[in-house]
Image (cartoon, rainbow, N blue to C red; front, side):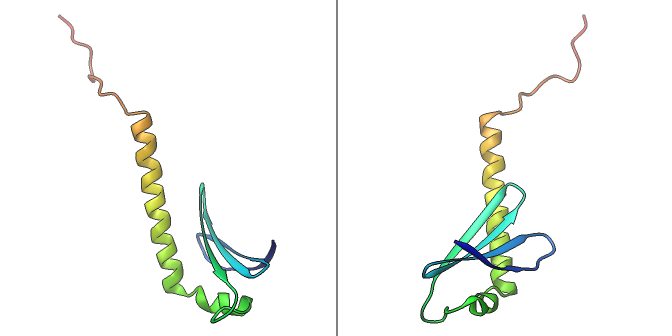
Length: 93
């Protein structure tokens, strides 16, 4: 697998990889990664086709998916370690 290019974005790292007969577009944001694989042939034949494919709508949809991943991650951690309700003050008699 080799790096075929990068897509500039202000908040995400977007890398294009090439591996045999496919391209992989990987989005990274903090702890989260999202990857899409595309076989070559048909509409995808080279890295320029991937640049055209990764338009604003594609990137926005990937960001929405990463936000969903973040919510799932947070909810799982909260279930693992739920915050116990504590009284704010000790009762004094």
